[in-house]
Length: 364
Image (tube, rainbow, N blue to C red; front, side, top):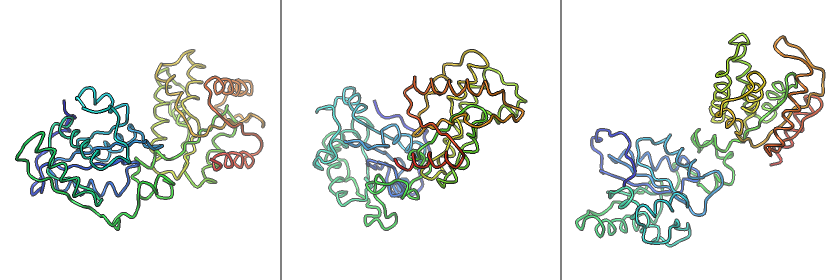
């Protein structure tokens, strides 16, 4: 079995190579990697991308790497591995050794044999060129040439090595530097990658607890963006008449707005409410919730703050009353404890709440 191919496209006119290969950790995928891949795409009719690393790196799990590559380069054939994925692959494709990924510090020969096997047995093809930004590229190409001659075609032509920006002049950055502080190097990350390193701050609270005012003020203090509460917008658009299915759509849309804003946010994203709030209203209005909404209510945040109802209730024409505000607050306290979600209770004036939240998020 081979890795599924993307939708076929006509061969590029004047392409130098029929099939090329780029291998990397992509931890994370950055502009230097993208320069390498873009160069390969311009010179090849078809491009294979392989990503693996052992050990793994925080924030760069296989699912994230696969998503980054799929969004940036959907026209490629991709294979993104971690230990678990490779163990399954090794069993199904007859890997001759232990079912563990090569360690990053293993000898070059180990990695070259591994990549050759992936091309031959998993992709079920050979390549004509390998693109790198490293000195080892010539030896890598020679090893692939030998592998394909031994396992696929004795007359296979030499695999060419194409070196791209070896001196790192076009894109002066490294994965190591980015992992130390991705936000300091945010300009070297595509929005889809950058978003995964943004810490999301969730603000919860009952009606008239100052949540929305706090969201705007905290975002300003942090120099970033905030996401308004979509449920209120939907309620106003429908004149306060919500049906059961509206609540699931509200939760989905709230998270979609988070995803969009996180691509532009700097270091943090302040979220005025979460699907947990939508779950509260769904149970309150209809007595139950859709299974998907129950699942969305588990959506994690880096920081969660609960606004205390410790100032007079203000009726703006859309809210219920003080008793309901207290009921909401008690519900949040119970749910957060039951779900094991760490949170900080915010009390006092707006300035005091902003300061408490700022201290908490910047201390991490």
